[in-house]
Image (cartoon, rainbow, N blue to C red; front, top):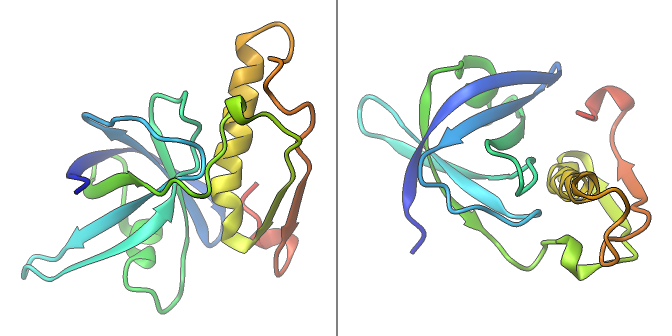
Length: 162
């Protein structure tokens, strides 16, 4: 069983009117692979708990964990994460979770990334991972895909966080 950990919000970045990136400090974070997700658990003062899964937006090389959350108007968790949560607040998360939809530079390429809406989030982790691997050397590591085209479908350009 993957343990629950406390995370401290270091920053909340506004990506679109409905989308925020939560930048988190997570003590004891074991690291993740690009494409994985975490479960976020919220506990109300009366003890009621609820949890949702959110894709990790940060590259494995980054010191902090980033989750990009799109607010659902009738959502139970996303309005809190995008409208109420502030730097210094704490929340519980469990992860990393998932291993079927991951990519690392060791897998090589070619690499074609296709997403719809908020499905771009794990792909951004993959692109950031690739960029970090390229930045570590003066030239492209032989195992890293030479190109990484991205195809994204969204309701409109305003709906895309990046």
